[in-house]
Image 1: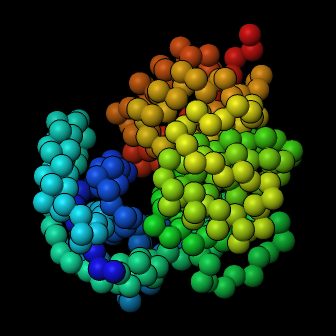
Image 2 (image 1 turned 45 degrees about the vertical axis):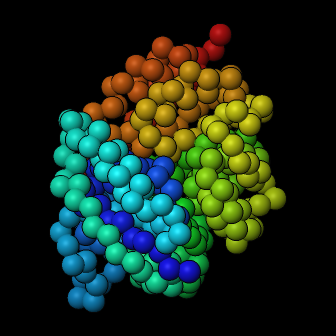
Length: 313
């Protein structure tokens, strides 16, 4: 099956926002091509995605690509995407040109092309992310997360995911119960199990993410401790956790903060990310007014990860 590809030119900080617009308008998957990701080392633990001499994008801006079936009402989809892009043009950060380009592509091309940019990545002394198709011999004490993200978000190399992983490494205790809201490829759930969690509930509203996260949990021999559930945020959760993690978007984190304490044990932690500079104070205010005390914060580039503790009643 072939697809219509819709490419939007933007910036690193707006990547998640544009990706969500494409997905909300029915994209069968997205790819993010950010030249800065290929060669910039952000921490001493980062490894390059690829050799500069052999790989480079043919553009300097960030390009988000979404994919749509040829049988869909494509003209209406483009109109809706353009309308959504117009609505965000007044946001107070650099969105780039938001120029749209369209072409028809073969399924095999877009499903596999991105794989050459996803390489083994070391996030810390302990955590290593390994694509399923790469070979890596783990050292003593290392936790290796083996992934095939498919079309779902979450290779672990985006700043928001990296910060969540580092927060889990720091705060998760052996036999903790964890809830992962918006699990994507399942990387945070798998990491939680490998860091010692007893049980993990992973939720997502994207059926493709449910499929991919389940497969990744199986590959990492973690599915016996992970329950993958399809549904909207906390509506399908009745258990309570020691740690709730949500790598989503600032506005959704703020909305989630109204109810998240209902699924948290006393003194439990809420790790949230996907929060841009312009929204961090807004999210902090919502956490505080909804019974959560900010105890730690990570930031990288324009992104923030907030760690908050449920206040004792």
